[in-house]
Every structure is written in structure tokens, then in C-alpha cells.
Image (tube, rainbow, N blue to C red):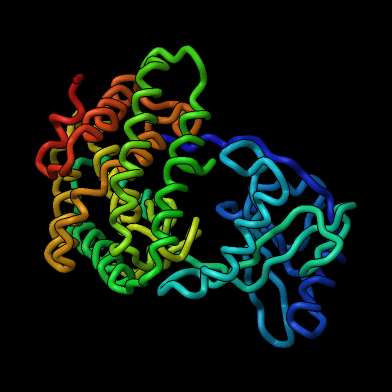
Length: 376
């Protein structure tokens, strides 16, 4: 299994009493804190020392309000890189997420957005603030990437895997059906795709110097080609649709069967549908390269199932004329030595070949992935 690297944290101290006062204010009555622990770790009874609370690490908070026991998740953002450098950068993202999460079907609910005070001793909705946080509902389930990890390990998939793939594709069909006439939002989203700290230029800036799998001149060529694509996409503002914005296997939580909740909507309520489609389908390519060295086997089946279902139900064949820079961005993510430090060099090379080559085609060919991963 390829692990995403933790990219550093900044910590803050705050007290159980500060947390209790904040939640009591939010729910309009006294609450009792039952436990606080890192999301993904074992439940902790009672409240341990809250010193060294790390920004960027989500925490589950369990508390009693009246006769009910509730769980919420408190999330913050790491400050290092990707356009998150200043408190105002992080505040902008978290305030937007609070306003946008609850507008998207099947998205985890946002309860509040707030901040730690400058001295780090309290939490408040807003005011004398230092660092911001987001409070969301707690959702049980298993992230989709665990399914892909299992399929990669066994080389086998079940009928449920196919149903889940179709459910994800159907979800995008549904949310992308909501359109809006606002050309300036589409142009902004395309501009952000190229220049935002979380997107193409931010990813390129995060690549260390003197890598053994790509030359700096090749990364410059990718950036230059993406700028050309920005000017092509500016003419496609009629495609503006409701989007998730970060629809990948680490942001989908499956429950029983094919029922799921999406997490961490990003960068805007409106955008290009290709953003969501590429964010998910790049992972079928990514996992397949690790398993087979090319797009093949069970992952090719998932890749085709997702795409064919989406195209059949939307009849959006024009999407194949705009996916290129979005695939470039997502390819740069999965090839990144920062996000995937343990990835095989050969896989990185093929991913970057894919990025470089398909940017040169005006129409993306679903059958040509294995030619795109070859050296140009």
C-alpha cells in the first residue's frame, strides 16, 4: 500500500474546559466531554492532555448534550505550502467549506466554522482569532482507497466493486446535471486550475530539485502546455456545472453496499465536470500501473465502467476535449514524491509520460492510455 506522507504540523495547546465552553455555546446548553482522539485511531475514553494538538490532524470529539451522545470531527489545515502559507489562506478555505459542504448531496454536514484565539487557550465562532477550524459531523465507514488497495493486492474484484464504481459515476452524473450561466466562474476555475497553490503550479513548485525521474525542462514544458490549455478552456464556459472539486478515493466514505458519503469538497461550488471525473479515474490508472505496469486487468475494467457509464448517461462527449489539463494536474499529484514518497520510479516516469503526452492531443482517447504512458 502506498502511504500519503504527513507534511508536518504546527501544534497548539488548549484545555478541555475551553472545548466544553465552545460546544456548550454552540448547542445552547451545558455539554459533557466524553472523549477526544485522532480520527482513524482507537476511541479514547475520557479526555487526555490536549497539549500539542496538531493542525492538519482531524480529531473526533465525543460529548453528551442533554440525553444524547454526539460525535463531531474538528479539522484544521497544515500551513506548509500549496497556497496555505498564511492564516488568511487557510481561513478562506475553511469558511468557504462551511458554506458549501451542506449544499452538495451526500456530503458530510458542516456544523460550524470557528477559530482558536491568538493565545491558543480558547475556541470561538469568530472574533479575536488566530487559526481557523471546521467542525463537521462524524461519519462511520471505510474510505474507498481501501477497496482499491485490496483489489491491487488480490488482482480480483467483486460485483460490489463494480456497483460501487457505477455508484460513483452515477453520483457525478447527478451533481453535474445542475448547470449555471456564469462565465466568470468557469474562467476563474480554469485559471485556478493552472495557478492555484493547490493545483498545477503549486504541485510543480512542490517537486524537489534534481529528481532522478524527471528533468526540470520537462516540468517547464508541462506548465507551458497547461497555460495553452487555459486559453482553450476559457471558451467552454457553457460547461459550468455543480462540482465536488476533490472527488478522489480518500474523500469518499463507503457504508454498507454502494451507499457512501463524500468528504472535503474543495475550491468552488461550480466548475468543469472533467475536474471530478479525472480526480477519480486517474486512480484506476495509478493503481493499475502499480499492479500491471499498464492500464490492464481489473483496474482497466473499473476505468472503462466508470467512463462508459458517465458518457452514456450524460452524452457529454465534449468532456474528452477538456480533460487534458485536469488529468495533468491529477497526474502530477499521484506522481509526486511529496504525496507518495514510496512510489516506484518506473511508475512515476509512466505517470509523467501520461501527463506530458496527452496534453498534445486535442481530444483524449479513452483507448490510448497505454500509448500515452510510453516515452514520447
